[in-house]
Image (cartoon, rainbow, N blue to C red; front, side, top):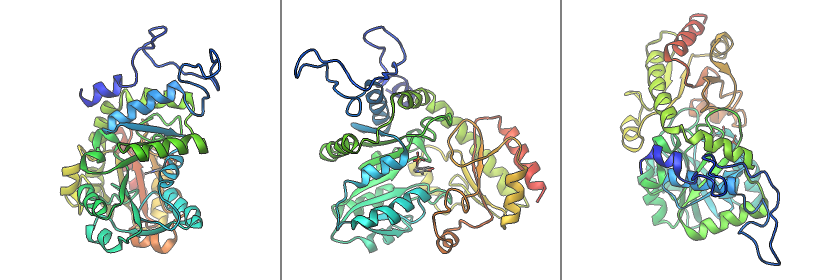
Length: 379
Ligand SMILES: Cc1ncc(COP(=O)(O)O)c(C=O)c1O
């Protein structure tokens, strides 16, 4: 089955009791049992919920994985994934991850004696250089948030596997429609479903998908033990979202390319970060491992005051954190999504005070560009 067919049908078969074509929201905390030890496979809703299971099956299929586990947020999904690593073990991480991931790793998980090395994973040699005998995981984000650095998934997976480490990829920026990391050797894919998978900016959620049975057993055990599950209603919202994922991503990609091209020509813009641009340092790699380039574009206007003018002058674009929804969102990474990263590191990564990030939505492309144009003219 093709991607769109899988998105619409896998896990979302008509309800066996009523024939409802949409999976019902099983809003229940528990299930009646016929007798002691006699039940229909459902005992308690932290452990099993049919709406959540349907979403887990759907998202696993979209990423080409056997198992899926849905969590209350992207961060809860990432936290559960890191429970595969034990005290005294070491993790290599992409230097420029989402700020919340950096915060969880450096402020929380280091307290449990998990060691982290943050490197620019777009240089494969950097990964090789920090691998240690106790390295158990390489955690990648590609393209990174917000400066769009692309990592070679195949090359890093080969290095990690030789050293006996799993590879995890946060695929939030691309969605499985534009990038399927498991096809390049990655072991585990995580998403903030809050973004493109839900796609309508109306729910927070996360997913972990993988093929290894032992690791899947442990993630499922953590999901039930720690209990950061996705609610039935939020699971349903994400399923509603994935039905149109292919169409939405096509349009995000189309408008993303047009917005990036417009910004590249604009005299007030100093630099554009977009893997679809021929000037992007990993453009050729992005062409190889992505089906498109998506709707995330960052650009530098040179100073905090210029960024403020743009962010406060836009009328159609909404100044807000988050991304991947139908509406165009615009944000300031240095003070918003990446405020938890220290200033020296932000500067080194290119997350300057003049950097603006845009999540290109599904409005008419010309309207988005016209709005950016009038805002840039005010600098
Ligand atoms: C790339 C990436 N990963 C993970 C997360 C965390 O997801 P959530 O906000 O759903 O916890 C985000 C949120 O912005 C993100 O952009």
